[in-house]
Image (cartoon, rainbow, N blue to C red; front, side):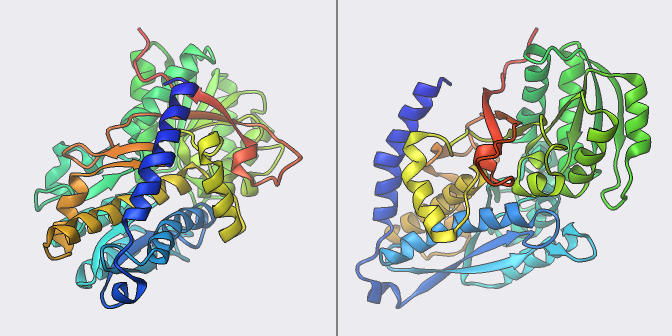
Length: 420
């Protein structure tokens, strides 16, 4: 999609769809809205290695919900939030067991009619079967492992049959392979070594990258797993140095990614290094630091929005409210909340009870203008957009070192069609 076309779509979304959608959430009066309420659950790893990125995601959802409540609620309903942390001190990051506990809390509370999150796919895999049993929909703005929504695994992740796991980002079935295309076609990669962090997301995106790399003629010299709790990765990095691949690709999140970036800078400083959206966050910038993180490539499983002119007024409001800059997954979280709010509105206006099942059905039928463009879902809950954005970390000393908008330089959209 050309930059001009993206801007036209965004201008349309912001000028018409988003404004009208938020305005349409208003109930008769704030007093009437306060007479009844429903709750939206939020599940994110708000402590540990990925806390800063998760907090930005939380803020994105909060902004949409606060906007709706400021206009009197949604079709007569005040919107409450139940925010739960799926990280634990023992894990040092997200913990699937805690995510499962949180999912049970959402399902058990009749006021919770839908949820937003999780950030991580390992949490999503733990939550999805529980949510399925309760017919409770969740909309993730960032988790990308394709298995959760793949109909081949429906018996495992949605045993009740209907889709309950919806996404405002695409999956690693596109994010990993599209980056392989980009690295071969643009970075001229002929050989690569792959690492992952043994988590659901990291393994999934690394395997998808590897499969496409081999398909398009890139030689994979090896694929190893890192233990996120280990401190020293120099042994595997020294092995990689001896094999001298053109590039290193890492599938994983910040807990291992920060250490990998620091140590790779010492052992293989000139090698092309890339990862998925797990390497795109303030946590990576702050933890890895410059110059170690300089030059890394990363992707997002969504269009790049934060630099679009049409989004600047929204970003200004966000910064004024939360005193921090958003990233693209802040926006996909805001859009996820818009999806839930729109579903509640449509159910309420239809005269049906606003509950798990009716809101789930309404989310499935979503066709909504948002900041990233129109959001709609296939029958499995995946967003119909397949855009993957590519970035490179380039230090801009005029801005804070952990400012994603200015330290990740947007390159373009990764090619979706496999190169032949």
